[in-house]
Image (tube, rainbow, N blue to C red; front, side, top):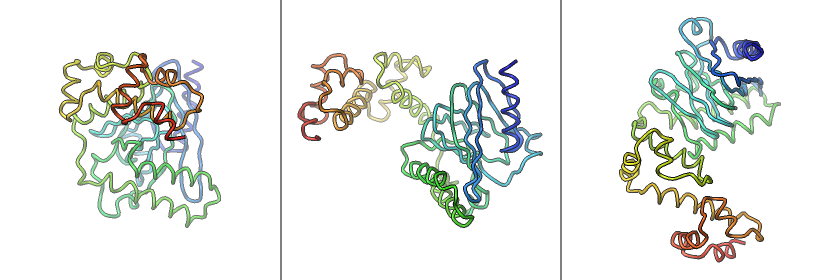
Length: 299
C-alpha cells in the first residue's frame, strides 16, 4: 500500500509532464522519481524507476499529444522498450526512439535512470516518414553518433539559459545525428544478430566475474552451449577466445591507466585471470609484449 500510493503519485506526475500513460506495478520494490527540464524550448525529463511499467493504448493516445517522438537516452540500469514489432533492451549509453502517436510499453524491472526528450515529428521526418520498425530499436552506446548525441544532450542540460533559437538548433542537431541510423531503408537486425548482441552484452556486463564461461553464458542466455558456439562460429569466432580477448583488452587499458605500484597479479585477477602464468602468456600473444613491458611503454 505505501508502494502503491507512491506509485500512483509518480504515475500522476508522469501523466502531467509527459502525457497520458497507464501504469502497472511489477514488484514490491518500486521506486520512482521524475524531474523536468526546459532549456530554451527543449522539453525533457529524467525518469528514475524500478519495479514498474508504463504504456500507451488507444485510450491514452486519445488524451495525449501525438506530434512528437520520445528520444530516450539511457543513463543507468536497464529498460525494456516495446512498440509494434520493435523490442529494445537499453543499457547505459544506449538510445532509442518511441513514437508518441502509437501504442508503446516501457518496463523498468530494476533500478533504471533515463532522459526522455521530445523531438517533433516534422524535425525527425524532414526527408520522409520514419518506418514504424525504426522505433523501439536499440542504438548501441558504442556508435559514434550515439556518443555524440549523449554529449550534445549533456551540454544542453548544462546550459539552462539557452535561447529559443539555440535550443531549436540543438534539437535539430540531435535529429540530424539520429536520422541516418534510424533511416527507413536501413535494415533491422535479424533475430540472429539480436541474439548475438544479447550475448555480447552479457559478456560485457560480467567480464570481471570469475563465473563467466561458455556454460554459464549459455544458461544465462537461455540457449544450449552448442548453439552458443554456433552463434560465434558463424562470425568466424570462438566464444572462449572472444571472452579472453575482451578481458585482455580491459587489462591493457588498466595497465595504461593504473597506478604504477599495482601488482600485475592483482590486475589480472580483477579481470578474471586466476593463473598469472596463463595471463602473461595470453597477453604476450595478443599484444606482442609482456604485461610488465606494456606498462613501461605506456607510462
